[in-house]
Image (cartoon, rainbow, N blue to C red):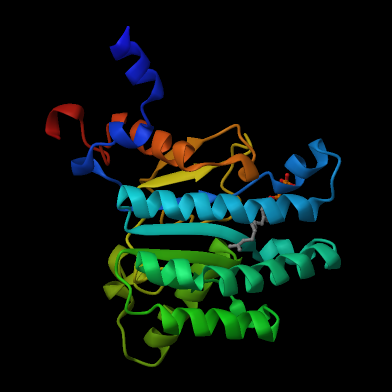
Length: 254
Ligand code: FPP
């Protein structure tokens, strides 16, 4: 009886196998708007509560010793949302960075960004650069925010870079391979995600890390993003560890 009670109250953290940890977790944080609407509130209320879930995800990664966390915070397509919502999201980004810098330093979190941040308001660009600079020596966990990010645009940019190098005579077209292509993506300093989580029950990728998730394990949760907790993260890691990653090989070859 006591054993059953112990199992029921055990955190998924205790079930994580530290030998088989995912190195990199990427998350599509979806469902803020619907969560707020269900509560009869404005969409912005959902985003405000989404920040708490960001903290949960980051603290969970620090606790579980996950080295890379990448969050889809604002897509290139999100610029088409109502102006007030876009402004509120940019403001939330700035206030969150101001608030969280202490947590980043205490937990050894290094901030990184991918996406076209030149489109962001200048105060947001400044705050991001400041935080990136202030945390650049931290080594426990790299938090990458995808902001004004489009994976197709990232792939087009890489192709354009490589084409220019060929045109300038610095590169032979037949030298272009997987590795060189990946080295021209915004994520050149990150390993590919081992695990991709999406909340809100939607089953799509929405132009996020299309190249990088070629062999990622996908985990779709029915919860809305503001409801996401550390336990959800730990549970997803346990599920990931139960999968067999074959990378095109057979079970017997592994
Ligand atoms: C998706 O929900 C969420 C976003 C577009 C923004 C995510 C932003 C945050 C969690 C807060 C700010 C982030 C940081 C890093 C400080 P949705 O609005 O598309 O929800 P819906 O699909 O229900 O409409």
